[in-house]
Every structure is written in structure tokens, then in C-alpha cells.
Image 1: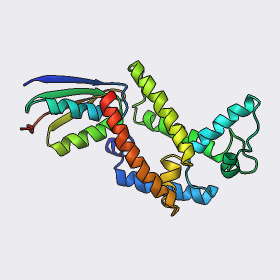
Image 2 (image 1 turned 45 degrees about the vertical axis):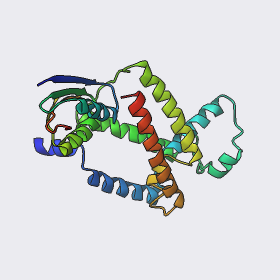
Image 3 (image 1 turned 120 degrees about the horizontal axis):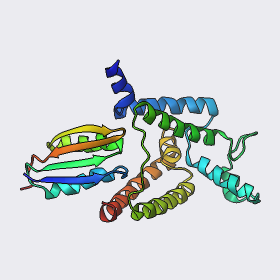
Image 4 (image 1 turned 30 degrees about the vertical axis):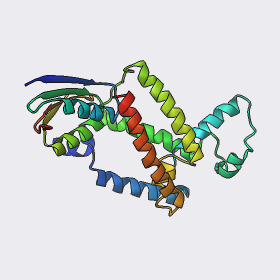
Length: 172
Length: 78
């Protein structure tokens, strides 16, 4: 029992197991919701929800015309992407609680905050220009036989090389 | 034999791995590196990398979600 707990719930799964589980989940999601896994559109909807609450409601720009994407009855807060994002957070929380690795992490130094804000802004901006992050524009795009997934993969590789150089120079 | 210490608490992947890589490069064969981390992917990627390099290694979970990794440098750069 102890051994099973350690293998399944405590130790990290091998990459190939995780890959099979993720692909099966993505296929189920596509069958159930008609759309493969996306993440950052959910954050965009949250931003739009805040704008809407502040009184802004002109979501007619070309971006939204092309990528509004809400099904009937969905709102910026309650939609399939938002709920899935919330569920991912909940699942991650459950996983660390079950493996008893839950821990509040402190901020190490101001540099970490600066890099987090700068990196977050770049990622958010880039994800919208690319119509998705490494999930929507890569993990879901390539199995959908979309060429943009491969373009995204190459660009992500280049970004990764530049990013690690910056990290090695300033963060390590 | 020298003992080196790396505090990687509160630092996300892959910073603990990169810090270990940088530190190990400056160490001599037989030196011991002790690193503290609270990121569970360090347990995977640091250990995989150290194993591939052929260093001796062990780790323990010292608290909930907190680990100490011990690495003895085996191969010398020269």
C-alpha cells in the first residue's frame, strides 16, 4: 500500500505516462466540448470580465470578431475555458496535498518579483499575438494538423534559448 | 574535500538545476554539494542530470515539500 501510494501519488510520473494521460484527456475534452485544450483564452476572458465590470463593453474589435469564441449562455467568467483553468488549479492543489508537499513559498528577493512581472507580461502579450500559449498553440495545435503549431514550436525553441541565456546571466 | 552549500528555497525550476550546474563546474572531484530546494521538479531534473554526469547523489525530504540533495562530484574537468 505504501509502495503504491509512493509510486502513484507521491513520486513524479514518468514523462511517457504523463504524455499518454494528457493526450487521452485532450481527446476527451475535444469530444465533450468541441474544442481542444486552451488556457490563456481563459485569462483573456477574465480581463474582459474586469473591463466589462468597469463599464467597458465594446468588444467588437477585429480580435474579438476573430476570436470571441464564447458559446451561447457562457459569460466571461463562466465558460468552459475558465472552468477548466480553475479545475487545473484545484487538481494541482489536490495533488500536492495528497503527496503532502503543500507549502507556502516566500518571495526570495525583489529581483524575482521584477522578473516574474516582466516575464508574465511578455508571456501574456505573446500568447495573444500567437492565439494561444504552449497548450493552445502547440500541444493542441500540432495534433489538429495546424501548421501554426509547428511555427509556434520553432519560435518557442528560439525563445527558450534566448530566455535561458538571460536567466543564466541574471537569475542564476 | 570541500563542502559547498546552495540555498535554492523559493526558486522555481530550472533555477536550482542551473545553480547546481554552475557550482559543480567550479568544484573539484570529491567535493560535496549540499542543496536545499522546495520545488519537486528539482528532485526530478537535478537528479536526472547528476546521474547522467556520473556524480554520486542522494536526497531526503527534510520537511513537507522541502528536500536536501547531496551531490559528490566524481568526474574532474581536467
